[in-house]
Amino acid sequence: MSKRVLNNVPVPPWGLAVAAMLSVQLSSALSVDLIATVGPAGTAWLRLSMGALIFLAIARPPLRTLRRHDVPVLLGLGVATGLMTIAFLASIERIPLGTAVAIEFLGPLTVAAVRSHSGRALIWPALALLGIVLLTEPWAGEINLAGIGFAGLAAIGWAAYIVLTQRIGDHFTGIGALSLTVPVAAATAAVVGIPQSAGHLNLGILAAAFGLAVLMPVLPFALEMLALRRMTPTAFGTLMALEPAMGVLLGLLVLHQQPSITQFGGITLVVLAGAAAQRGGRRQPRSHQHTSTDPDLIGQGLK
Image 1: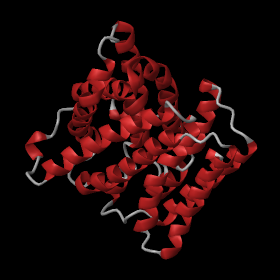
Image 2 (image 1 turned 90 degrees about the horizontal axis):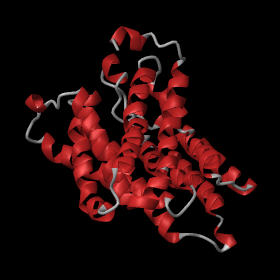
Image 3 (image 1 turned 120 degrees about the horizontal axis):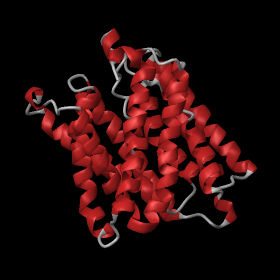
Image 4 (image 1 turned 60 degrees about the horizontal axis):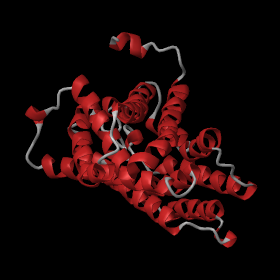
């Protein structure tokens, strides 16, 4: 498919961004069955490995432009992506999808608030934390500390992903960067994923992993790229604050996880906090071209 065709997709940019979020959360929801068979680390390894093969097939890694001081950052980014994926999948094995996404969202939300260089901006992570308390309902006595802990680790991983992506985003952008980092992420997940999935692999499992990899990260990345060509990064980032709500929606539709009224209130607080934090948390782009490929925004579907 040519670039001209891609640039003339008859879908509004906000629709592309929403489709990317739906693809991410659909992949997460559908991963639950695979997790039950090969475990969260096994699912992460299979999904990242399939994603790596797809990216390597459609893009040549930019090894000729690789600088020595980029190597540690790229390796760190790949390792952070792998660990983040394992942690997130381990969390949705234990707690509802919407709750896990909301907790993980604290990572990018906090980074955005800190980058605003305003003490007032820290109110947004605090507001999101209040929303998460409403989501987890600790007063009900059925809180899953392991699930919340894994989601918290995923939040730290997502924050590290954003910071490291910015470090190399001015030199490596687009699919080229992913063709370098996703294989590292797959290798990281393999350390635990291969032993966890050993004895459970068959053609059906591999086909399911390939489909999940298409849903995330391949399809969301393409949709995000298309959306950012026609949206400002601030508008895109604000819209992406809806991702926790998408997690609740797909958890309801696919996994039949029915949130309570209190939990609906909690997810609303997280979404509002995320949208508010994005308004002031972005660094200024260096050029119009860089604006269309902001590394803080691209590739949010890697988790």
